[in-house]
Image 1 (cartoon, rainbow, N blue to C red):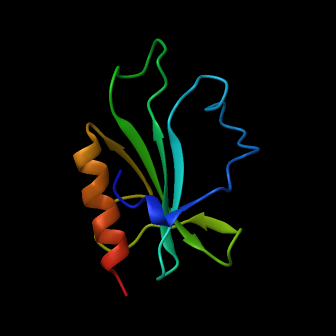
Image 2 (image 1 turned 120 degrees about the vertical axis):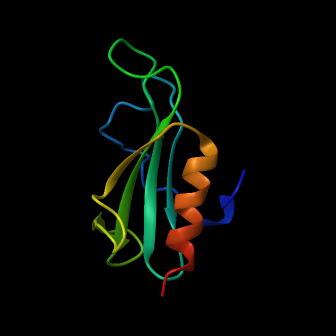
Length: 97
């Protein structure tokens, strides 16, 4: 998968329930200290069958981060219909200075 080398294991104690529902959830940390928490939509009523939710984050250090809305984005949470959309966001975040 794209960007596997940037995955950090900070969600072992994740509170979002992703582990209980067997969903994809990765956190990416790029050298510019931007990153993203990417989670697959839950497979339950009220959510799309496919897609991902991307939360853009800025790392304060190796284990601490907070949401951030970079220039050019309307917010820090983005609904993506496909993995290709997620990769485009990750490409953009990784390339910023």
